[in-house]
Image: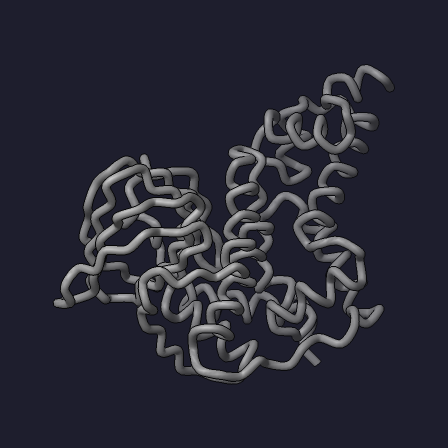
Length: 302
């Protein structure tokens, strides 16, 4: 049997070469809103003033309305424009390489989630044993409450700005992709995870996270370590550890930072970097939120 680290490196190299699209979110104007791009795809919380645009993405893009916007006009390809009211939870699917036109007369707030075509195909293979993804536009005005719930969670995480967790966003994008495949691409619910991780796999994941606090970690990385699909891994991990992967990793990083603050004279910026935070202010924000102390206050208490 392959060593877990060797297996992970092999799977990650293969996945990196085929799943993502560098600059996937570049098609969306920078001023549109806060964004995070991950292994699985990307998400942007868009707040846009009245405008119009023609949109032809290299990947699959899904928009979920976060506020009402009446009188929006849109169309695909050579279709005539359709005028409709965007509702909270209204969902639109823009498949890769399909031209779409949009015109909105008032401020439009929505969550935009993007997937590279191969990324979504890979997820379909892992979750549903199905390699073909035939994603098509859906009727304008369709409302999807599950998509809205995931969009609100993405908005909350992106609103953390510097403290946004890439692993959290990656998890939510993965779950959004599974919902998209289950609801809008054929039938097939896929098998559900029945329990948590076996002890040896839980230990493997815990050790891996401890050893890689300072690097980016994706759901795909962790799922590969356990030989599970990403969706099944998220469920099994949460059942085993009582919290989501990103929250568990955050608390590991905070514990590591505490130990360094107490047991060394390293500058706080270095402590932040070594424990996996993007900056001193990122560490300070997380520590104040979860420990009710700043790094400086914690170090001063020793």
